[in-house]
Figure 1 (cartoon, rainbow, N blue to C red):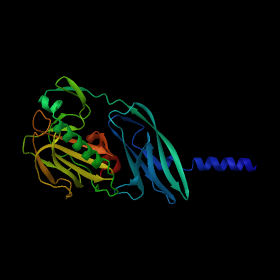
Figure 2: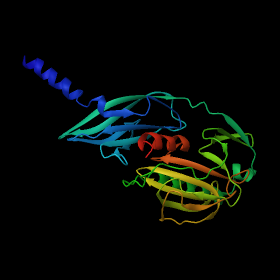
Figure 3: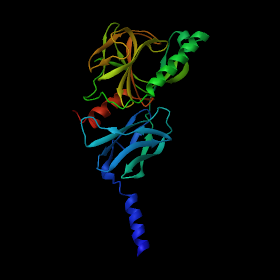
Figure 4: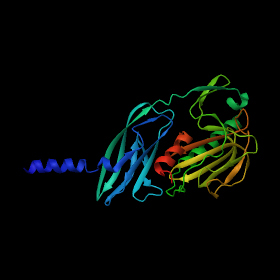
Amino acid sequence: MRVLFLLLFLYASLFAFSDDFIEMSDTKVANGKTALIEFKNKKGLEYKTVLVSNKEFEIFPTPLDAEKSYALIPFSYYEKLGKKELEVKYREGKQEKRKSLTINVISGLYAKEEIVVDSKKVNPKSKAVQKRISQEYKEAMQIYGTVTPKSYISKPFILPLESKITSAFGKARVYNGSLKGYHSGTDFRAPIGTPIIAANDAEVALVKKRFYSGGTVLLNHGQGVYTCYFHMSQFKVKKGDIVKRGDVLGLSGQSGRVTGPHLHFSARINGVQVDPLQLVQLINTKLLQGN
C-alpha cells in the first residue's frame, strides 16, 4: 500500500504542471520564424526559462496581462528541420522542476533571387575593409545578444513605412552569381528621403554608417526583441534615445550594399535573425491580442 501511495505521489508530481497552464502559438513553425509560448500564472509557481537545443530563453511577464507570462522562441533560417524538444524550467514551491514540449520545425520553402552589385561589396579584398566588417559584426551581435528585462512594448507594432514590399524575408541571395546566404529581412520601396518610423517604443541601441547595411539604426524593444533599419541616408535619432512608436528615426537612402534606394527592415530575438513581419503579426495578434 505504501509503495502504491509513493507511485501515485510521483505520478502526481510529474504531471502537476498541467497543459492547461501552457499555450503554444502553434505546434509547428517554419525555419526563420518565431514561436510563442504563453504560461498562465499560478500562485507558488515561478517560471524560469525554456531550453531549446542547449540555448535558454527567458520567460517574461506578458505585456498588458498580469495573469500570464511568455517566451518567444526564435528558429534560425539554418535550423535543422524536424521535431524539437523544448524544456520548460520552473520552480514550484521550493522544488526545481521541468516539463517537456515538442514543436516541429518545417521548411519555409523560400525562393531564390539573383542580384548584381558592385563587386567590391561582394568580396572586399582590402584588409582594412575586412577588419571593419568584422568589428561591425561583433558590435551588432553583442547588442543583439543583450537581453534587457524591461519591455517597451505596450501597444501593437506598426510597419516602418507604408510601401510596396520589393523583397521578402528568406530568399536565397545570389550576388553576382555567387550564393551569399539569404535575405535577412523585408525590403520596402522607399525613394531617397522617405521618413522611416519606429515600429514600436524602444531604446535606440545603435546609430551608425556600416559597410554592408549602410546608415543603420537598431532599436531595443526589451526582453531580447530588436528591430533594425538599414540603408538610411540621414539620422534623426542618436544612441540612447527613447523613441515612441511612429517617431521618425531618419530618412531612407541607398547606402551600403544595395542596388537602389529602399528600406531593409529586420528583427532579432536573443541574437537570432527572424522574419520581421511574422514576428510583428505574432506579437500583435497573439501576445497583445489586438490591444
